[in-house]
Image (cartoon, rainbow, N blue to C red):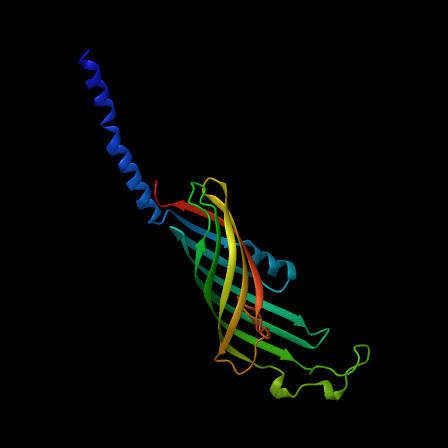
Length: 232
């Protein structure tokens, strides 16, 4: 009869420190990066191919720390718009850009690491561009032939040079688990506060931004991502 309480006591006591250890481990994991995302933007590559304006790519990396998401993008592109037959003009831009941002994830941490986030990032683009045009903007109807007054002077027929542009982006997006170590991400962007430096001529395109004449722009990304777990 005296052995029963001793048996019960021996089975209960060792489990208490184990439970505390699990709670401590969970708290540490919540404050430590749990997964690293590496991927490529499928929309960036597909858009240039579909519009037949040139090749481009964008690489993505992000890492969540608790509810905060740190991320960065690097992209490169060559954009050519040849309208010499229709409008007598052609533009060519080649360059690279980067984006660094921080966002807040509103979903609870799970094994799948699904995310819904809102954030802000800073972007900067470095590029070379060339404009070739033999015409000014015509004042007559499109059906009528161009006159001598439509032609541009030689000093303006081939401007170009190097350019640097920077801007800010508000982003909303998410990531979803597909299969082990593979996820899909989608991000919508509102681009604003663009600044141009080292450029006397406005480029037609700015890699990572869009049309050079726009004061603000919208964009989106569709990422195919590899999930690399950092903790077990």
